[in-house]
Length: 563
Image 1 (cartoon, helix red, strand yellow):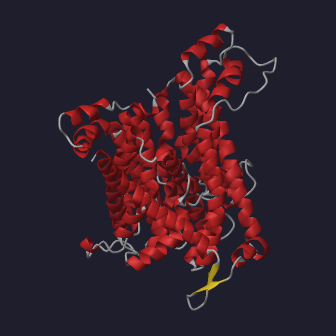
Image 2 (image 1 turned 180 degrees about the vertical axis):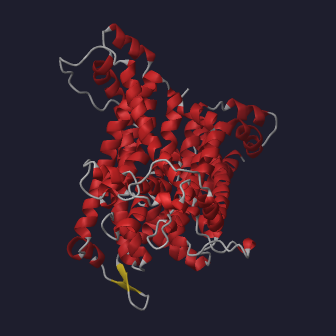
Image 3 (image 1 turned 30 degrees about the vertical axis):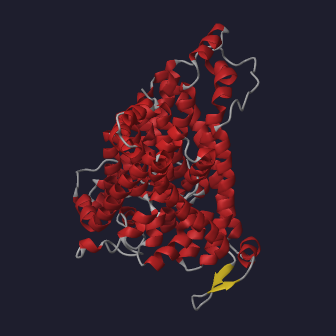
């Protein structure tokens, strides 16, 4: 009975993940050997799609080159910024970590849109950068605009990981370093850097994955500068999918899956790594502690970097229409105009409702399924190291690799363009994160609590529901936060599986399921572009995640150890 009840609690999430991830991965490989004919049928071409990509596709070199830049530049810049910021946090206090983390808690499409409005060469601060000669070309037409957005979103996660590593350095090590006269930069190179090297490597790999699979900034940027210029493998494969070239899209996805798997293996190795780097100490390296003012300056710069896009977005959202397109652009509005918010909320209501519906449903499902599985994995050893390795692998794979097989599956189930298409697919990405967060949370859980409940005559299932879950509030709150964030800001699945807005005339049919992220992208289209409305919609998109973030702030800080 004991084993059966453990299986009953743990299997639902595992069965779902295996069914909805292994099938698409295998299906992509099979589809990559086919091409779609004009009649809509699939025709065997063997390695033809691979040959076309590497030898005949005229956009191949550009796509590959952009992908390499995004993959290498994003982590390099993010880590270079994150290390001094994490050191400043350790010196000045973890209370500043939450403000720095905010970019990680807003929809990626909003982040991209905010930066593109900020860098606009006519109506944004890009005008002044060009006028003052600080840059020579239109900033929004450059692939470095994509890198900037990716760095802005990846930088907070890198800070969190490295800061956690610094906090984990034992006090005895700190005291020994002090006794040896080590302080400041010299201590960092001799003591801190070797100890936090696994965290730095982990942060590098995760931010490299962000750059490699970047999608939302290209989706927004392409609407501003035209097709292909900013494309990477991820976006190019989506365009192939959207045009019906399922075989070629699958080919690109197979290649990305192989590269992503290599990065995932590096990520898993980084998590278990020990001392990784030890650099020689130059004789001129200072032994004194860095002045507190320097740390304050670094932290201030990080906070400004985080805040500027938010401030600019808000200022545009409350500007009168004539001031938004004023050249040269004004920074502050002459008066507050709320018309943009009224129009964004009125026109965006169907999109907003679907986003709320699917986010709430998926968050609840993720918390329940992830908690049940994570507890059995951590406390009772369910699945062992192999299951945990697969969970970590899924965490580092993007939604994009599933779109072609899942589209065909959802088409057969006749749920495309409905709420249920999103409810069925969103847990693919949220359950692994939920399991990982709760698995770590349960590492410090007192299993005697469950044993006492069993001794009182409760079944294992009842003990879990009545005793374990109420004591898991902090872990579930954080797992729920990440599930809500993904659900609220998701773009690829809604783009692939929906075509129309929610039908408010038939609300219970849940037909039409385009989300608020799609609405923001539609507003950024050159055809419908309204800077005021898109800025207002961006501010609206930030509010639900921030409300959730504030509601679980204490739980989050306990998990982070930011106190």
